[in-house]
Image (tube, rainbow, N blue to C red; front, side, top):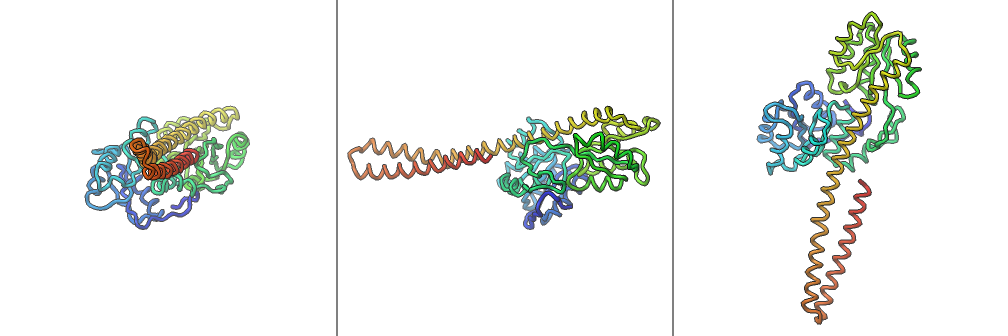
Length: 366
């Protein structure tokens, strides 16, 4: 499976270790990584199993779920960073947790990238690229003029984008009515069968919300919802069922499958607007929280880069200048000493000035 939003990238020399307790998640992500061009993807069902594999062979890239039995992802990360052989290995954490404290824990433990579940194919591939190549290169490569629908694909933008809603109904008139109600505020697409809806949901750009008719030929709404929620690449898509009044007793089944809500037919425009608006606000809130996690990671990286520049490139020449001044004070009448120390001071002043310019450029870029 290849993301339409990202250029094809290959990592033919890299071996990935994928740790997750879910067989479905491991198989899905492993296939994506192989399609991305990785040489080999090894799988572990828990942290201890992953640690055992690490002790047996060289691993270039680790992707681990936070919540695992025996040893969770954070404990695995800490063990990896404490081992000199793997201290610099790229490590990406997957988690359903969207909490600042948890993300900070992972960042302080040395995580390379943090991705929140459930995620789209596009998001996962961007995070993989960013973890390996660094945020600046990855963001530059990911920027495209537009996607297939004309929307900007610049992932660094914090501007809220219109939500994508897919209306799924085998009756074209029903689709038209609902589309007319929502088109002003959302990007509305349509599918006249469950099979078409599943294909649309599997491709980029994915819809954020489905308005899904329950009774359809071939594949009904319940089966569409079940398949969406069983697939790690589509389970994030929210579902609202469209149902006739005499079918509302079946909605318990819909909620058990993962649907958020239902709207009765024939639809009432104010009700449709209100229900969709409520869930759209929740979807946007989750997106904003994901963006905050990205910002948190970028800020921490910036802090580390600034600290590295200060410690490695600014403090040493300043110390050298202090020594030169001390030498001048010790022998102020020695012309050779004055000339030598003055040259040293000029050289270090020029170097410090250059480093400060780089530091200012870095902060502006970030």
